[in-house]
Length: 97
Image (cartoon, rainbow, N blue to C red):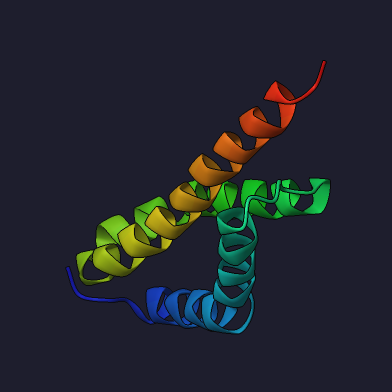
């Protein structure tokens, strides 16, 4: 299906947010969890917003499947972060008496 002008505007805004804010934060989180750190409450709130927004834009991506690979790759990064953060949290808690 062809992009509508409304979809183009929303996709542009999403792309700008992704490039300017979300990807840099995701890379910072990834570096931290790869070093064995755990997520802060602020980090968890950020990831909750990302996942909530992903659900909200799913219909937009469905209407514009050419953007699906970008959405899938972005969610894979966040999935990697959460999986590694969970490992780190388990390791941290295993060391507690």
